[in-house]
Length: 156
Image (cartoon, rainbow, N blue to C red):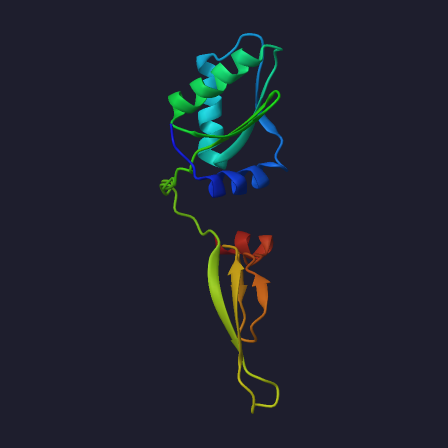
């Protein structure tokens, strides 16, 4: 189980205030499927709220401790039926897929000033694979050239 300083815990409580519960634990209790879902939520969000249905406060506290010890997470706050849990996000390195198509790319557009005496304006723009930048600095969609069915029939 991770330990948090009081300052970190206070900041996390403030951040968790606006969150909605992402996992709900019902009458079946803490099942392996629920643990797996909480772990996946912690990996993607880092800070989550869990709602535990049941009126037994001791059972909720035990569930809270079990979650934190099993998943190596830090307990942030336990108010009523809501549990706030924190674990630093796991940085996932995404592998490139087998197909290598054109995706989004960053392009720098430099436009000269109208008078020619001022500095040129430099902007960085994300463009899609089917777009191109003209000499004037505008973005246009690169469409495939249309061919005439008549000319195609004559050439064969």
